Image 1 (cartoon, rainbow, N blue to C red):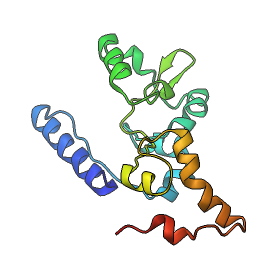
Image 2 (cartoon, rainbow, N blue to C red):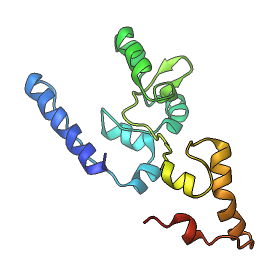
Image 3 (cartoon, helix red, strand yellow):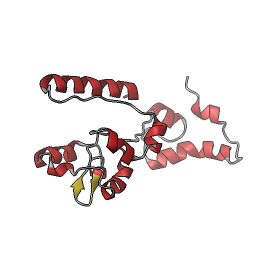
Image 4 (cartoon, helix red, strand yellow):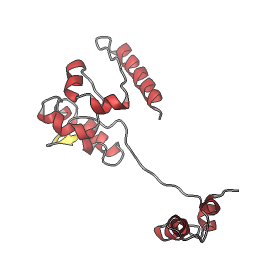
Length: 159
């Protein structure tokens, strides 16, 4: 999901929440990726009640007493559901010293895919396993190191 689409979804959710709970106002502000890296968490915590942060900040934030342990405020069943239904270790990445300090809202999830027809044409066979991938990529790697059995455009040409 594109960052702006993600923000739009968060704004819409906040608007609906405020309609149901008029005593709460949620206003989302976005920051650049550079600000995400450069602005100290302490500065943000002084200005905002709710933050989107990245997990490498958790230990530092806990030691500076910037974040509340969510497990002391949210139902255990809810946190257990989050743990089971989050991608990979996303939920656990926000656990520090036995407490949950944030909830996973997205995850970097590298994936791979392949086209059986191209794998077979490149000599890797029709299944995608490490052996097939190695057989298919070896001529390309040989080309990169000076062995010119096949040109990369021959390997990657589709048509």
